[in-house]
Image (cartoon, rainbow, N blue to C red):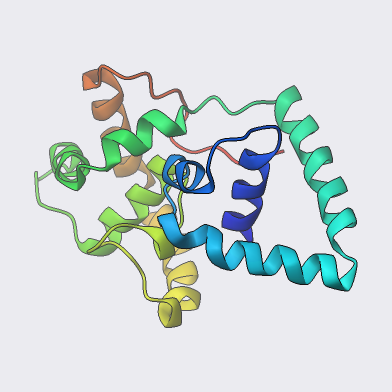
Amino acid sequence: MAHAEISLLLARIGTSRPWSHLTADLGLPRAFHSPLARRIRARRAHGTWPTLLSQLEQLLDELQAHPPWAHYRHRRILADDLRLLSQALTSAHPRHETPILAVQRRFWELFTGGEAYFAPRPLAVPADHHAKWRQRREELDAEQMELFEAAFRILDHSSPLRLGRPLSWQPP
């Protein structure tokens, strides 16, 4: 939730675009801005809002100095078709097997920069399983990164949209 909140607040800085458009661009549920508004009101009431705003502005400056290479908006557009991601994984698999749900879920996260908590069905992880998913995610990265990279190359070469490299990107 914290990463999604920060992403949405960063996207909101300096724009008048509606919250629902920003949530769609970030791959979040459209109604995500409602609980976020409550959290902002609580931060203002407790006096922590100015500190958070200052941290967001500092992070924005860092991101402007070192922007991501990935075009996450284009990736989210492609990822709306889960069959496309699954086909890329299947094609990249040495035995052309359809990958298990956990592999598809993790690839969706890496490809879109999103969290499985906000993934579309059937990839979404229920909130009460999120802690277990974080551990499984690390195992999948160790076991399947070559498959993920190969599937990304398939999508990158076949897509009319610019996806940017590498497969995943972490902020500075």
